Amino acid sequence: MHHVTVDPEAERRYVERLARLQAADRWIVEGRLAIRDGDDGGSGKLRWQAEPAVSRLDFHGALGRGAWRLLVSRDEAVLTLADGEVYRAASVDRLIAEQIGWPVPVAELSWWIRGLAAPGRQAQRALDEAGVLLELQQAGWSIEFDRYREFGQELMPGLVVARRGERLVKFVVGDWTLPGRAVIDG
Image (cartoon, rainbow, N blue to C red):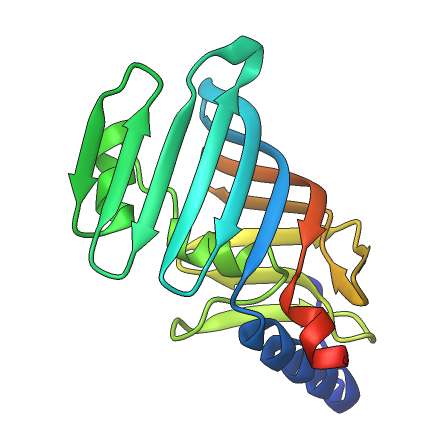
């Protein structure tokens, strides 16, 4: 972590950004996801569509391998693999841990990919003067945010890298759709 002097102005901007992005409860992000655990790992294209009732993650592995779809609602997570196999669990974290053998923090990731700390869990964070998140320590993970650019008047990170020991989750953003913004602006 950088040594952080808490700039009240940056903090205020971060809190405003958090409020705006929380209010936009529908969004779509598309990009490349890589997951690694030591020498083992995989990567591919991810499309993550968030809606208030259910989120949908569609993944297509490199060279067409390892496609899956994940539907996450409040009381259930459903994983459908390319071969038609379907797995269900009460929580997405449990489902993912069962399937890949270690817990990818999906709930937190839905915040991290937007350049936000997940709610409820204590976090250490470093902001730049514009109030965007540069580094975060949360839930045992170290997360770095980079390549911010504007999508629909909102600065969003273009690269999110989360590390925990040998484990790495990396997301490179191709495109953001924040349909809620137009309503707020108009």
